[in-house]
Amino acid sequence: MRREILTWQDVDKLIDHLIPQFETEFDAMMLVTRGGIIPGGMLAEALKLDVILTAAVDFPSEMEMDKQKQKMMAWPKFFQFPEDELLRGRKVLIVDDVWGSGRTITAVRSRVTGAAGVANTCVLHFNPYRSLFGTLRPDYYAAITDAFIVYPWEINRGPEAVLLHDF
Image (cartoon, rainbow, N blue to C red):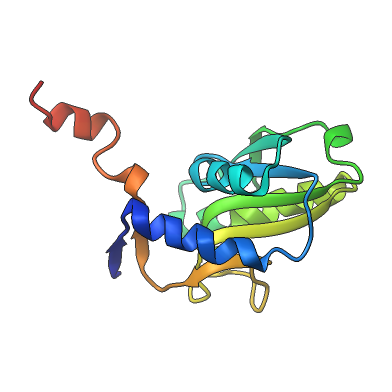
């Protein structure tokens, strides 16, 4: 798979491309951890949103057979999600970094709409070639890609990178 490494300037351009797309004002923003935290924070600042919520979602595996197929079929596990009353009747902008398979953000959208919130999805990158949801796409996206995107906040981070540094 092709890999694309972005700079902070690239991310700024993507955010600048998203902002004019918003057709409505939002009452709240839901950041999907971890990928949505940084772009969501940047958008929240630009849109002057004060109600910022988070959703932590995982797709655990339960069987050892055919791991790839089983991984795609697993039900989402929500480690963190706001109470329904925080979503009811609110226009919520759900933000993640990328829509690859689309499983995570669509699971979050379903929970928001299930709580009687109005859900809108937003990502920096949309990969229609990996999406599991046919013609369904994010409501807002800055770019279409077929590459594996590496964002600037992912470069040289984590325990592996720390072990490589000479302090």
